[in-house]
Amino acid sequence: MYCVNFHYLNTEWTEANVDRIFSLTDESSWRCAAQGFSYQSHLHGWLYRRLAAAGHLKKMIVAAGLPGQVSKRAVEFVGVAYLQGLESIEHDGLLASLVDSLDRNALPHLSWFFWTLRPREDHIASPHGPKVLEFWRRVEARIRRDGGDFSELRSSLSLLAVFIIDLSSPMVEVWESAAPYAQRHHHGYVLLEEMARLVGEYPTEVARVYRAALTSFLPDYRREDVLRCVNGLAEQGHVEEAERICNLYTERNSDLLKETYQAIRAKQKALGK
View 1 (cartoon, rainbow, N blue to C red):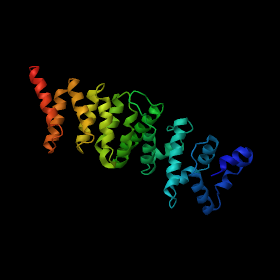
View 2: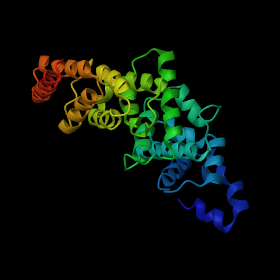
View 3: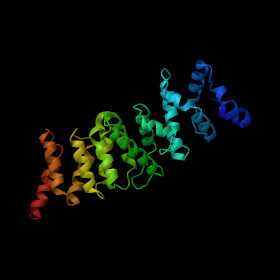
View 4: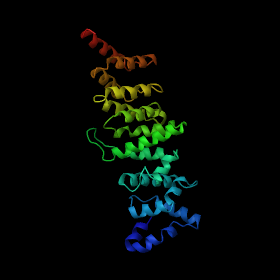
């Protein structure tokens, strides 16, 4: 808990004794130190570099029998280090190894942690956005190479749509792969909210993501976001797509879009279409 204070009092001694504080010879002492470290609230570059280089951080993440907050805090520090440039997703660092191994505990928690750093206003782009979306793309690419069932991880990754500003083709494919699994961890409401945010500028792309989600579940919360999505598609000229979505809801015994469908048809009739 106090190694940062030790570092302030005596930098040379503290850095020389990191592997005594986090003992390399006494497992019980190491576990106590790891639990103390989990109460750190700020990332300090010198400490991160020493713990990562000596393998202490990785051990905190993968070791069995540690309290849950230890691995979670270690994963969060890996995420902060990545955003600050202390970690790379491209080289042989800790984050790269977690992605390569498709760690089913660390990566979902890291996705959630990044989501907590999301922009709070629709019109404000997060400075973390590019790196977070690159993380998502890298993990999805690794999932595709593996070919296994990573539906729960994809559900967690779907949270990262909050960082999408430019819905380019590669990003559509990544989001489309995650959309069917969004509700696995009850993230369907995030999917809807972000589709509603982007439909005005990217109706074609949003329609693709919406269709992918509908292959697995019926997004219905929040109702206002469903309406924004479907009406947005119709307003952008994607009337057939909007009507198709309305019909899918009806086929699944939902009347959520009944009035919306009738309004779209009435407008089309008035336009002579």
